[in-house]
Image (cartoon, rainbow, N blue to C red):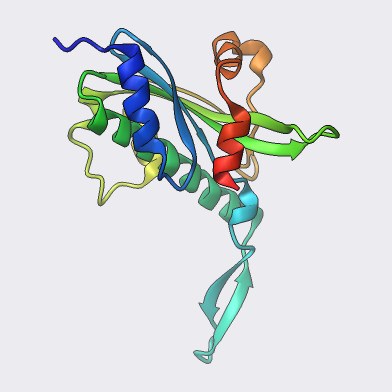
Length: 189
């Protein structure tokens, strides 16, 4: 059995996450479980149009429906979450489970402080990820098939990721108080 020195694990993972496209940060270690956050982009990163061809074979651009755009965003968020989990498990062999929380900047308040929403949370165990066919499976399906817990609020009609109501999730709310939001936002910028 490997012993996880929290200070060492957090330092190693902080360094490992430095180059990620979506800023991520380890928040804590309890036994062999890591908690991490990842700051994901908003749906605005997804283009509003997609390439297509006309009946005559000419190139054209077609407007994405809200559902198509939101599904692409959901896949992007899921991908960043899974990247964070895989990197944590690769770098910290004593970690057997990862709880990852996807954060998203909703706005900047009148004082210049970033306002953050929690949009997706999931818990993964190393053993359940071992046989995943990473090159074949889609990120959304991997989360659906392997996560032991999922907290997400999707708008029923358009699949839009909605902020999670933290009044019903005290553990997630408590986690946010331990996250250096400004540092994550600066790394995203």
